Amino acid sequence: MDDDVVLSAPLFAGIEPEAAQALLGSMRLVRLSRGQAAFHEGDPGDRLYVIGSGKVKLGRRSNDGRENLLAVLGPGEMFGELSLFDPGPRTATASAVSETALYELGHDELIAWLERYPPVAKHLLEALARRLRRTNEALADLVFSDVPGRVAKALLDLARRFGERTDDGVKVAHDLTQEELAQLVGASRETVNKALADFTARRWVRREGRALVLLDLERLERRAR
Image 1 (cartoon, rainbow, N blue to C red):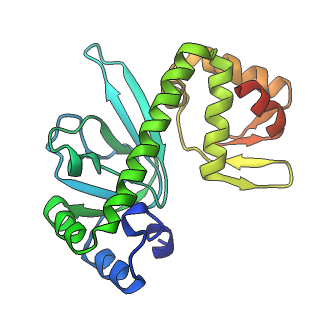
Image 2 (cartoon, one colour; image 1 turned 120 degrees about the vertical axis):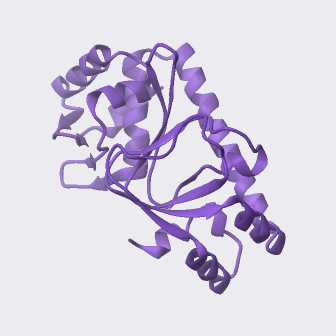
Image 3 (cartoon, one colour; image 1 turned 90 degrees about the horizontal axis):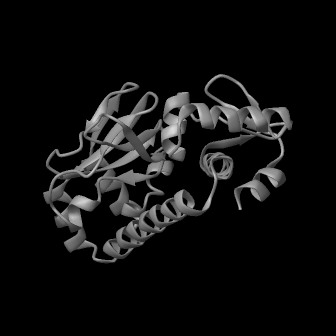
């Protein structure tokens, strides 16, 4: 696990390297296997997490058992920070998509840290604003975009955050099942698979298990608009 990746999280922004290392040292390391939850929807919200390695999905489940995937987060990103500004039950379930290592910071320790380094609060609020902006964009996409457009946009976002350049294009090891990818897009698995099959036939993407190689970013970007 790369400490530099963890220290890139908004929690550590704007503070001296020695202080950041001290905070990192005070956080508890938590390891999760795929499918294991850091917390569940409705649990008391009393701590924040920074991802050291792996991926975490945030999802909500309806009364009839259907799940909506809100986001997939990776190294250097954090979650659970809502509990700092609005204490109460968790609004989503956070579970590992792959083998994952987290740094955990309790609410009391976080408050003490913010009192010692007030500028950090600004960076946390900026992170919350970015999360809200992504939520607003996702809601707009559900209203105004068709499923293939949403699939293209989701693939480009995953490529931007998790992609690795290859000779053919950008390989995205998203680690999501077909059902999870459909939940992220907000559509049925069958409809998403149909869109992916179309993209594959057009040679825009190539499937490789729980990974995709994006072969034609320009056409995917046009389809995502």
